[in-house]
Image (cartoon, rainbow, N blue to C red; front, side, top):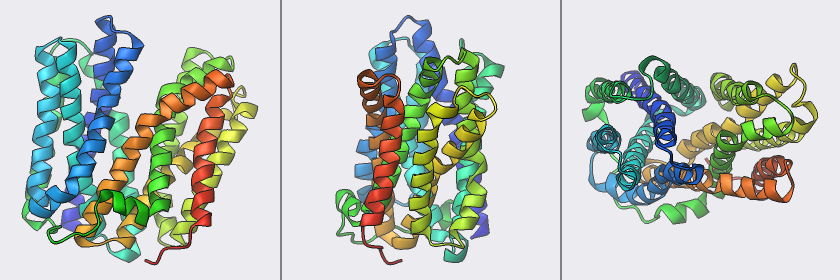
Length: 375
């Protein structure tokens, strides 16, 4: 188990670095070519749309194709989606390539998380998933930093992306033949499994929405409260640090307390932190700790949800449940910014807080109202 876990986490952390590099790279190149923010925003939505479609199709794929082959297939599609961007400036082609990029990444992440959930011992599940989430957060953070070395223009960033895509091949190949089988008859499709675990699916949808809202509008909210551009941007830094540093203690906690209560508690803490933001955001001392706490509580919706997913489902059913989990994340990520943007138009600028606090509170209340599900 240790060999499989180390190889998978090492490989996926490199893939996360690619995600962190490709997002800002594509947006900055589109902006430099004179495309407006609406066009850039719709292009940025293509991976989420691809994720919705890919997640719906993955359970059938995982019942017929080995996890190892799917992993390498996902990497190949990811390369086909990103690297040809260096060869063309065509906007329609970039939309298609961005869709392929999102589809390939969806395959890689669904296979990875189903694999990890399948092999993790129950007594250590929280810590192992917490470590996995930590490596993802660090990879996402490292990717944009690499652009400082390669620059945005020319071939250098795409050469770096090609090298990054080669790096996971060795660890994945090391354990390819040890991948668990998700073959077998599966009577519950993705959408049925959403109904079988509504608390987990709502949690990950809320996190997807809140994460995309923060990426898109948190600096704008800071500017509306009189912060300078640098101070407003560092709000994301503080929440990102909370995201990364909370994962290991969160995983340890998930192995020692009731996980469902932990999921509800995370939603309530995220709600409270959001509601406190208008009171402290102008305070240079207090806003960083608050954003740190908010980022940590928000990401717990994903991490604890993933831990509970592996606790409740096994085998072929786990593959479908994980695909449903990723589908709901992408759905939340897609609808979050338009929802918060409309709320900010109705109640400027506090609609931002109303949107994110409303989402996390809704998750907590619905989860409390639902009957506890057996392990």
